[in-house]
Image (cartoon, rainbow, N blue to C red; front, side, top):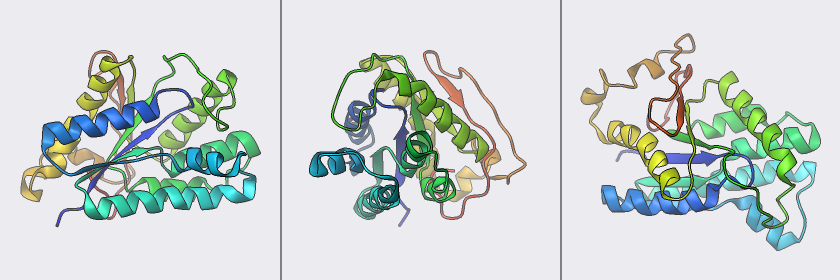
Length: 229
């Protein structure tokens, strides 16, 4: 059986990740006829349950819990839409605690994702729960996230727009990789994303491939067991 395709949605706070994840999961299920799961953010549940934000030593367990939920959903579904991944925990550890010790492990865990969508900062900030720090942290988080992905060659699409436009841009970024994932191996060898599996030296950068959002794809290291590429 082919492993599930994981669609990871990452981005700074109040950039519509949760709304987009729910809408994207519904749209992909409708379009593909596949079994699609949406895995919500563990951090939000953790803060609601404890009544506080996590301390530095609690970050690693939150990161593991998020990844375990993604893996569990992948066992019984064809597509899993992830409302954040381990990358976000690592980035917030950087920003809040000045701690980069989770970076390497977060990157390894995130490579399970076949599609990574980065939500743009074009939506207004709104308060929503304990995990919201304020509009002033959005740019630092966005910058740290981009830096982490570019340093480790994590291909991603930057999704902008509001409402239906944001959803359609996310779908436009996801469909090609969904089709590549579903194709038999013989059909994938000469396909669009062949260059992404060519080793650490490979580099491909493409901006504004689709109107209304930027697509950024940069060098992908060989991924053992990775879905999508």
